[in-house]
Amino acid sequence: MKRIFLGGGCFWGLEAYFKRVKGIEKTSVGYLNSKVNSPTYQEVCSGKTEAVEALMVEYDENIISLEKVLNHFFKNIDPTTLDKQGHDIGTQYRSGIYYLKGNELEIIRKVIENIQREYSKPIVTEVKEVKNFYPAEEYHQAYLEKNPGGYCHNLGAILDLKKTEEYNGK
Image 1 (tube, rainbow, N blue to C red):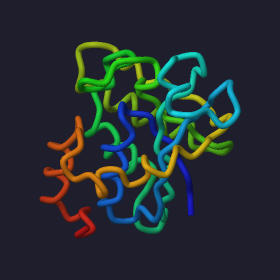
Image 2 (cartoon, rainbow, N blue to C red; image 1 turned 120 degrees about the vertical axis):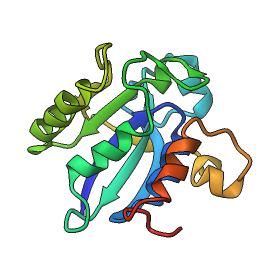
Image 3 (tube, rainbow, N blue to C red; image 1 turned 180 degrees about the vertical axis):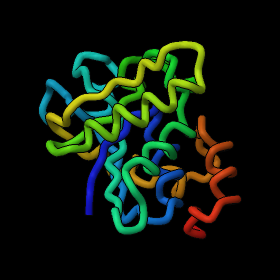
């Protein structure tokens, strides 16, 4: 199994989306690259932790490549907005791709280069190595499964996924 961490606005919608993609084995929402150990949601929202709301994605590379994982990610965000996705505004909502040590950086850069061709504005999605990841409080995990009427800025992406062969039927 491989892991990648993704920041794309509120982590609830990203998690709901990726739980439906074939080859995604596990997800967990949390706070990434915080300068505070084990921050709370309130601390992250204050902006003082410098953390980003992120989704840990564990995927089976025999079923789905990192390139495809990232292409799914870009279907869920506007990579040209800084510190904002949908109605979510703040540094914790910035878009980002966060990798563990390894050769993923080359793949990430290639995908961003290809995606940039689709936009007239520059992509501002940050790309950084993972320093730390703290799982969010339990009520945030699988939030939209527990609260089906909850806010989700990427509902359209979830509906579009259901029309593809990469949908896992969940």
